[in-house]
Length: 474
Image (cartoon, rainbow, N blue to C red; front, side):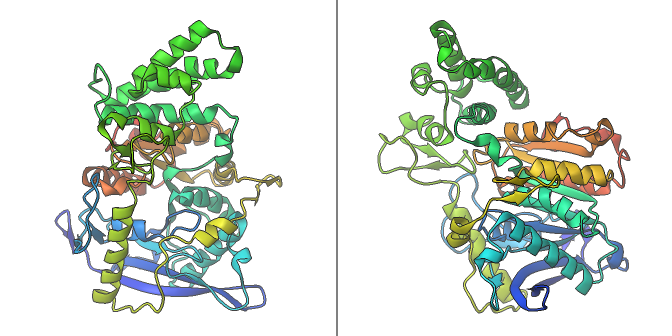
């Protein structure tokens, strides 16, 4: 293919690798799609392992929508219709910067449990980490890539996995060069019921979404500047008001409700009736209720039509159906026509059994057994033990599944030494959870990622380090 006027000769491989227990018995067959540039220095070219999250989600979204040499086009942010779909060369592929290995977690996609193993071996935080660790080591060995710079790119729960996997791999003598977090979940416990931070964390996202749908009066001319204003309110007056609970004076309650309403496009009375605490599903139903439309969860630019307008929550997530259908069809077209790979089983876009059986307990680096993983803590320890490890956080403004303010908070509370803080960079895009659905955002993200891969060591490109709030495209 050609990208940016450059010819890229590459090899695409669809395959499976077996994972074995200590006795040598096969326990899982892990499916992957790999794209490797045909180059003389293949052994030392960067290699990136990419995966989606769930738990229980296959990686078809990244495989077919993001950085591979071929990409399926969608109608985002409007629903994508039924077939035929467009699968074409991707001018924003990352292949010029890194080889790409897309991996399906065990039990998802075409990856299967085999032998005498069961879901208990893989459907949990630590079992999943062990499987990905073993797969990566196996891939490096089979393909002679141990001397390659190594990166992880995870999306959604894939960021939870990637953050913890960075530390997990380091304990098996695999040092990473970089971790890329797209639409992050780094501290699931911060959204536990009863914790007001979960409401604070969504407020800047609500404001960005209201801005997108022209529900603000007056309309701020600059989204990043507007979001900065809402951030300051969320961490200041709003957080202080919620902290008072039922003791908040009526006059202050009225004032805070009016400001929340002004920032989010909601009615002040509605905000007061919700006790100043707006849950995402309610926001998705309420913002466009007067237009008989609801908003998508993964991407609030999408609009859906419910059974009626009186409900409290949307009937479905308008940002999912057309996208997942298009990517699933495009994957099968790619396998059949380009790779001549004939799958013997159905591709599991989602595995609900894995989600139902998921064991969220995790043994943290400091030895504590956690009921929910604190992925930011694992990542921080990996960075302390490997001071050259760099982190890039990618965020969509209109994402109501993983709000960017929560990600900022988690990354700012890792207790990193001052010398390591510049290793963390944050970028924002005019898109949702799946940032790559939007062509302009995908291009901007590709430019940011190429810069990230070009940074050879800590501080080598000071213009792009420091973890600041940077506008789309750099």
